[in-house]
Amino acid sequence: MSEKMHEGLKKELATYEKRTPKSAEAHKRALQRIPLGVASNYRAYDPYPIFVKKGAGSKLWDVDGNEYIDHNLCFGALMAGHCHPAVVKAIEGALHIGTTFGMPHDMEWELAEEICARYPVEMVRFGSSGTEVTMHACRMARAATKRDKILKFEGAYHGLHDTALVSVKPKAGEYGDPNAPTSVPGGMGVPKATIDNVTIAAFNNLASVENRFKQFPGQIAAIILEPILMNVGLCMPQPGFLQGLRDIATKNGALLIYDEVKTGAKLAWGGASEFFGVKPDMICLAKSIGGGAPLGAFGASRAVMDLISQHKVFHGGTYNTNRISMAAGLATFREVLTRDNYTHVGKLSKKLAEGYRKTVAKVGLQAYVVSAGVNGALMLYPQEIRNYRDWTAIDVDLWRHYWFAMVNRGVLAQPYWWDEQWTISVQHTEADIDKHLAVFEEIAPALAQAQQERGVAFVGAAGH
Ligand SMILES: Cc1ncc(COP(=O)(O)O)c(C=O)c1O
Image 1: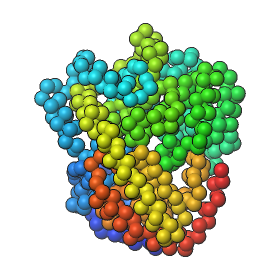
Image 2: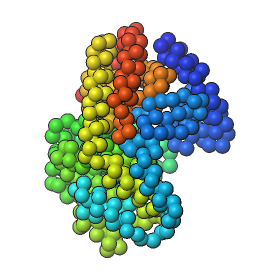
Image 3: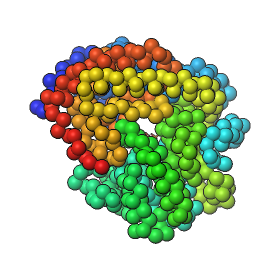
């Protein structure tokens, strides 16, 4: 334990270790064969991650038998909740008629119709992950414009392909000018040529975007963004930002790509285009559209997608449209992501955010609560975060105190990591939200006290 760690956090960590010895053991075993003992770096955290035994509805159980209300929901991939009956039934059905053929079938057209009915695209292709579809979207944009550069935002996450792994979590010493951030590789192995072809702007800063188009005239193929930046907790686009991007892209002949891997299903019935009223040229979907099965899709106008029809852009994949994912996807669109269910989760989302706000105000925590669709977050910072650099001022140990304290009381308030956010599934109930809020109310005074003792030295540190 670090010396700087405050007593409240130390106490919660000690409780965590006492409650989860089997997870500790499982992690130790896994470390022998699997780097970091986990299958994705995001799942590794100190002292060790919770190992899961099973999930059902809004809950999951760990290998020690502890029960949690689950707002991690596989990093937001489970707006359906665990084992949604419609999804289970659809997958079971698919299991008995063949899981994958590598040949076309009718569910492809059916799911394409569902997607084109909700989002402003005319044609789609499918894949299995968010990484895959943002990679293809970037390639399509490069082909459509015959340009190489992609503009992305500092701190934004679009998956693991080379173009996406630039300036995801740059360190302070690497930032560069706030209006022209440096392109920083997100780890070794990203070719320099790729880094040179990814130009970075600051979220909510249209001037930084304009600068890039001036700096690289006729060279930027696309602006890719999450309409709500969800790799820094939850950062809303300021009024006019999305429309500004739309205008800049159009003026410069570049495509606007919405990475809706998170927002597509969880923000609204029609995703970010419906929610904000600003339409992109391309959309990338994954996570919650699959109801828990690996499913991604990218779509655009017929003119753009015809680059595939004309054999100008190559797209393929052995597991594309495997029947398990497609059956799960169809069941999800038809029986989970329904207007009625958006009303249900909308109510829960409002209740959760308002409950948090009440407690934050009551205990005098220097923090704010933000929510959109079924996502939300407690932001341990006194003023609204507008971009990645603002977010880096968050008090990490205080956030860890919050997360472990909630976990120790049976609420997985969100995935581990202070850049994440909670998700509410269609299977969550008022009772789940009541319990979540009761636990937060119980721990909030200790957070406020710890914050006071540590000094809110970070106030205003980031600036805007
Ligand atoms: C916005 C966004 N885009 C892309 C991805 C990558 O998706 P996947 O993990 O399915 O490859 C993620 C994953 O967290 C994401 O949040």
